[in-house]
Length: 298
Image 1 (cartoon, rainbow, N blue to C red):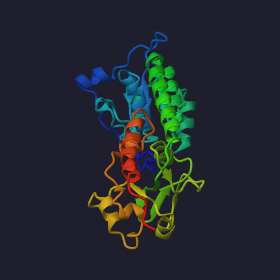
Image 2: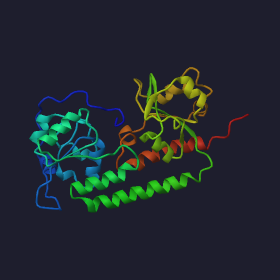
Image 3: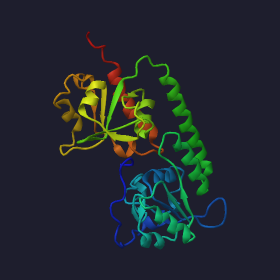
């Protein structure tokens, strides 16, 4: 998950996957801005998605273990974990550009810079970061002609949705459940809160100026959400069903109206990237179901 995933271990020396068709797809091409070949390593899945969305896959020579979309990235060699590259594997790719979002150990970034490598940080943690990141990556890899229309279309649609939401007479209260034991949620300014608001809901934690934090069941019950989103998996893979039987929650509107939702593709919902509108659409469908519920009986 983009919001909580951090590198846990470095990969040991591995055989680089580069056979047959995979070698052809990973072979760097010449940048349109000059004769030098561009060899890109991405250290974050959201950035990998952007690179591929602007037709940069042929330039990629390295990715992280969790860079798994689009499927065509599979032949690109893995050089470590999210934000935690193996220096040995990274050096074997001979990159001309390393793009990162957040490193688990910033000394790695300093070391790359000291070695004379072209390391570029691309901020992409919030909704409005996405079009900017698309443009920045497009410029870095010589794909601006592909990046600009994509960035502009996303900006236009995000702004359209914001304007549309101002016309809504009802914006259901939403509890964003990131984990269930202990309960964790997303506060004001977090990416998930931005998605919920863009999808036509109101995050019940938007009065808390923290990205992610722990809450008590009593705190949630008192705020009486009309929608509950579960962005995690339980052992039975049905956190939504579990919520419907949680002790003490039977008076919560979301539980009474069966507006508890799980089973989202978290690689879509939790990654700020080109598929953001898919995430918004999935959340909006659920929120619309709550909006259509009759008002509570006095």
